Image 1 (cartoon, rainbow, N blue to C red):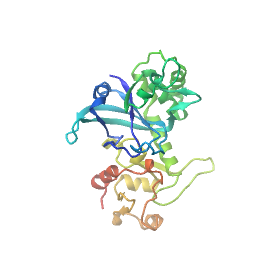
Image 2: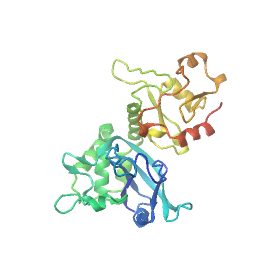
Image 3: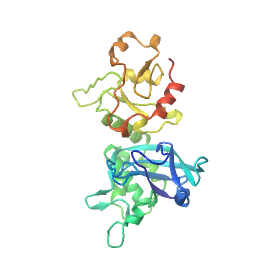
Image 4: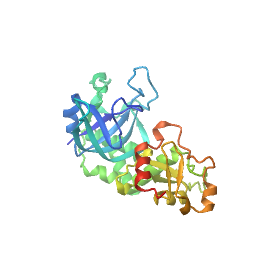
Length: 298
């Protein structure tokens, strides 16, 4: 097994759904096979499409996930899918370069410059040290007291340091994952309920808005902003129980006999949820469809 970086754009030319699958041509097959059973990190380049002139990408590492298996694409000759699970969006995307330092040491030449040939590879191996360094940087602000010592040690360790594979699981505990998902969703929606427009923050700075999974975790829903929506506590309860759902365009669906009149009066009067303007945060149609077909009682 080996760790790697998978490159995916905002508008990928391949059939990517990073939360579930990564699509790639044959030239990366041997490298991708090495990652089966191990963790990868997603990187978003500057180019937002396959066009050289396009831009808008964050140039940052934005999520980690585990590769379950590699299968052949039966529709496109010479292409394959890496099937993904345990997807986790970073609460803080990690820039490719920070304070003059690069996180991928394998990209560096002996003179310290970037090997542009390797940099262009869509799938490239990542050392255990570099993987944990990126992970530590992404989660440090949300770490529990139990994990902070591990994260700090990882970030100052030398590149030659050896780490146990269980270190990843020790860093990304359930508490850290939940806190990270909540942080990403609140940031994407400006701490505002998508269904009511309410933004309630108490005197201590605590936000009332909760992060709801569209496809539930118990149904293998990923910790991705595209599988999340910011909701008030009441709306979260109704959404989880399928009393409220959403069309792909944000139209609010209600099992009207099950929704109290007081709640109906709170819902956005135009009948639509307010999604983030940035495409990278908007709920994905695959997850919305799952909720409508498997959870909605309307």
